Length: 152
Image (cartoon, rainbow, N blue to C red; front, side, top):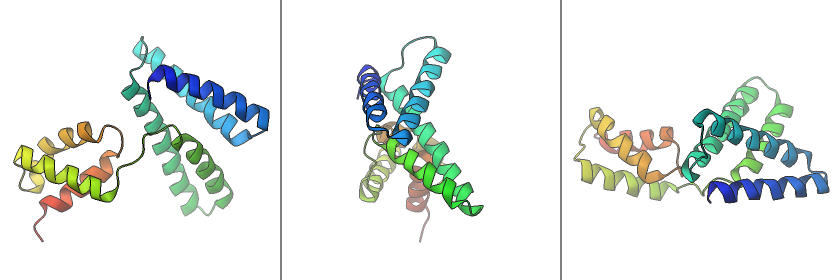
């Protein structure tokens, strides 16, 4: 999804959310549009599609961290609110890689880089992050790579 298309999609979805009275979607989309605008201002130019996805992933990660903190604090009301917002945000993110796809990606990257032990993660991770292209977070890729490189 290109950044222009993403902006247009967010605008359309915001209008629809306002018409239907969906306050969760309305507020989440407004926040997302604001995040994209701030990133564009910080960069001083339009965002590439990948940069826009990175902004959305950062927002999704923040929401997931909030969910974890609220859950550990016993604030289920806030957990539900954040989960609803995360669900709206995920509509705009690329589909996540399955576990099998992550394993295949890690296996291919290990073969290509010649990584053989956990200390080789430094040369493996940049390739994994590039190939995942926003469809998996670094933590998940790191765990899969570490598991593959650790002798059983």
